[in-house]
Structure formats: C-alpha cells, structure tokens
Image 1 (tube, rainbow, N blue to C red):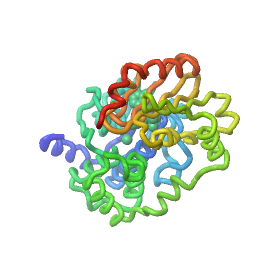
Image 2 (image 1 turned 120 degrees about the vertical axis):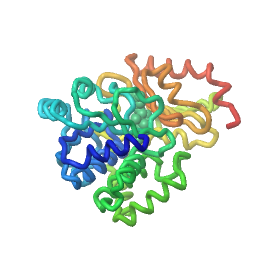
Image 3 (image 1 turned 30 degrees about the vertical axis):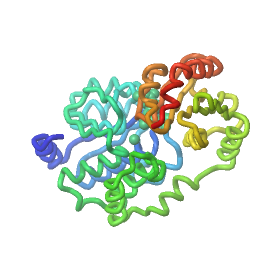
Image 4 (image 1 turned 180 degrees about the vertical axis):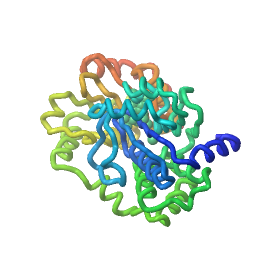
Length: 339
Ligand code: 5GP
Ligand code: MN
C-alpha cells in the first residue's frame, strides 16, 4: 500500500463497517493467528467482524481470543455466504489465489465488498482493491503488525492481538529458525511481548499439545515410512488413508512431519505425500536455492514459498510416489548446487 492508499484505508476503517476475514484451506498457525489478530484489532475499532475459514483447523489453535466465533464454511455455509455478500470489507489473509479458499472463493469473487490481500506468498493473483504483500515477510502475522502500524494504531496492540500475532510468526518461522526470520521479526516479537504476548505459554499450547496417537504416528513415519534418496539429496514420507485411520488421525497430526526428512544431514529437498479427502496432498520443503514453489506449480497444481510449498495429486498414492521419484533426475543438478 502506498501513502495515498494508506490514507484511504485509514478513512475506511475510521467508521464501523461489516468486515469479513477469510483465510486459506486447512488453516495453519499463521492463517488463524493473522485472522484473529486482525479480528481483535478491528473489534477494538468497533467494526462488526467475522472470520470465515474454508474448513476446519487443528485443535492446538483453539485457545486464541475470538476463536469460538470463527465460522467454518463447510459447516455454516449459508450463514457465511450471507455475511460475505453483505460485507463492506473483505480481508484475504495468508493466501495468494482464490483457489486456495475452495468454494468460498466464488462467494468472495461475487461480493461487491472492498477487498484486501495481506499475504507473503509468491506470485499473488490480482483480485483485490488493496494489497499489503511482501515475500520478504516471515509470516502474514508480521504483515498484520505492519498494517496496524501503518494505520497509526500500535497503541491498540494488547495481549489478545499480541498472542495471535506471536503464534503465526512462531509457527511460520519454525520457531524463529527459518531464513525468513530477520532482525525486524525479532523487533516485532519484542513489541508483541511488551504488549503482553505470553510467549512461553504459547510455545506450550502449540507444541506440547500432542496426543499419544499423534506421537505414535510420527514414530511410524520415522521408523517405517521414511525414504531417503541420497543421490538426489531428497527424503520423503508417504501415508495412506488406511494408515491415518490406524493412528486415529486428527487434523494437524502430521503438521511438521516433513521437517524431519529435511533435518537429515545433506538433504536439500523433503516431501510429504498423504492421502486425505480423496486426493493426495503434497507438502514440499527445501534448503538453499532449490525452489519448491516452482516445483509444486509445475507438477502438483500448487505453490507457496521458495522453501515451503504444497500442492495436490489426483493420481493414486503409489502413482503419486512414482511420479515424484521420477521427477527427481531432471532436478539432479539443482539439488547438488553448492548453495
Ligand atoms: P504445507 O505444506 O504446510 O501445507 O504448506 C506449505 C506452504 O505452501 C504454505 O505457505 C501454504 O500456504 C502453501 N501451500 C500449501 N498447499 C498449497 C496449494 O495447494 N497451493 C498453493 N498455491 N499453496 C499451497
Ligand atoms: Mn503464512
């Protein structure tokens, strides 16, 4: 947003409006943290706000202020449709393409509301009136902090907003360890803690909320499902629907598993292929210059960031695995690049 746009948006927010916040399919910590961070800020400015998610999200995110009021489009479709249709403002957070919000995308597209994209994914589509977009931002939560600052409202930061924003920064940076973490990120975290973010408690709520079956599923992945292909500096896991069922899979139970494959010394490219909701969902992670956003776009109808992306496959799980493995030789040189 340029200074003229900032002025216009300040004017828009100065009077209560009907606002809707939407975020991406299978919301993660940054999606829910940024949505509820913005929600709590707009509520403080007396707006009438609703957060709508395209589907459900993991239970380790269910403690944030405002979470109980989130509308799940899959469960409350008609109420959500009405709110989108009569919204004055729609904020699209942590996604770059309406495809990422599934059927909710048609409703957002049809609504005459003024639309915002606040996001940090590569190659955003052009469907909004205002955009606060930076691929340099570690998370959408960082951009919500920037948005509140641009509105001249840093004084409104409080414990509830800070807890939400801290959560998204923490989860999207792998607890402040990915290269996206900058000095600015830490300055923002410092401000959030000053505003009341309960940093130690948040780490406990997110990372120490495991069930026994989740840990056993992780053990199964590590013990029996890890495939390492040192010739391509690649390691991956795959899980069938039957295996998920065997371990009483709940949403969020496989989040982060892909990072174990990437943690092997010498591995540059990691993948996680899982049979869920009748398709194969793919997660890709990389270290260094190997661009998984490009890989996901080219072969798995997906996208994301250069070092973390996702996509899908309509082939069976064994065929998806074959496809993945057969793609590797063409990337051999890139995977062995020095950087
Ligand atoms: P994850 O592997 O954790 O699901 O996603 C990694 C990153 O890629 C996240 O930033 C996520 O928003 C993005 N992503 C995941 N799946 C897709 C997809 O199907 N399409 C696009 N464009 N991005 C995705
Ligand atoms: Mn994000």
